[in-house]
Amino acid sequence: MRPSVPLIVALVLWALAGIAASLWPVAILPWQGFGALLLTLSIVDLAVLVRRPTPSVTRLAPEAWSIGIARDVELRIGGSRAQRLDVHDLHPPHWTMEGLPRRLRLAPDTVAHVAYTLRPTLRGEARFAGVQLRLLSPLGLWRQQREVELPQRVRVFPNFAPLTRLALLGTDQASRLVGAHIKRRRGEGTDFHQMREYRIGDSLRQIDWKASSRARKLISREYQDEKNQQLVVVLDTGRRMLAQDDALAHFDHALDAALVVSYLALRQGDAVGLFATGGDTRWMAPQRGMGAIDTLLRVSYDLQPQPVATDYLAAATELSLRQRRRGLLMLVTNLGDEDIEDVLAAVRMLQRRHLVIVASLRERALDDVLDAPVHDHADAVRAGATARYLAQRKAAHDALRNHRVMVLDVTGAELPAALVERYLAVKRDGLL
Image (spheres, rainbow, N blue to C red):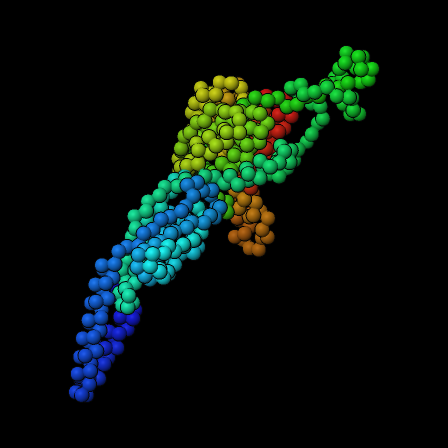
């Protein structure tokens, strides 16, 4: 309970008038009368405010949110009496908010609607605590803060908005939308698709000579990419994925890219799984069907990178025990030259049964340093150190390539297109 600004102003004026009354005795009686009136009004106003019931409040907020996507929340406030009040919702901390606090004037037996906008900045579970109300007394002399208990738990998922756009497109169109460069080679694949008339450019190996003799014209076999293969995205949740690019950490970029390539793989008829290791550990066995994307979201939405070193060899051992069938493993990490021995040992273990791709995320700030003009000695030292770091990083990548490991050296923004492009290339070339 606190006095409002009008009451404080009235008290200050009354005190100043007291100074004047001390100089002119004729003003003492009016001054005392004004003080008694002010005291009576403030006591009555306070008593009415204390006895006034707390307005009812309900919140309409989505249960599922997408990181970085703003959505509306609505508060409904009602009461049986006229009331002036300020409203503020105790939303999850660190979220971006617009539209609060709000001042309302409630009419008797009505419901006021207050809408505001929230944008989540962290994945995982989040909690709304309650709603704060600041009630104003009828005369405006007092204000009282009350809190309505209105707890609500919500879940913040990776940004799945791109998936809704991909759902409206074919596989080739969706792949181009994420930036992948598709190289089509007509008629090649591993699964028989259909018989059709020969076209210029078809390989002689595609010609079905028996069918051609019956039809008395050249007939080609057309193949499509094999289905029901297995893709497992391996996400590093260790300290290296804490690196920040713009508003998102490397891990958030990796998770978004994993969702995109998994969605397209499911569209292709393959099974998709997830293995997170390093900090938080999570396993999702490969599943087929578009319903698997919902399972993937539920399994991964609260994953967070931790400031710990990733044991790549232990991760490879565990993954070998879990994933028995041959598949395509996409390891997404931020590879440094000091990690090369452990990563190489882990990859060679996995290569006994699987096809392995290593996607090494590169901080965009490194490219910005090399592209920036050099004006002084400090700029030159910075550029030289960055160039040396990138050279060591390239040497680590080349060591993996020398052992027939496919390596992608990309920034977070380039990762979805790179993973999709390499996945389609593996399918097209029949490497699995």
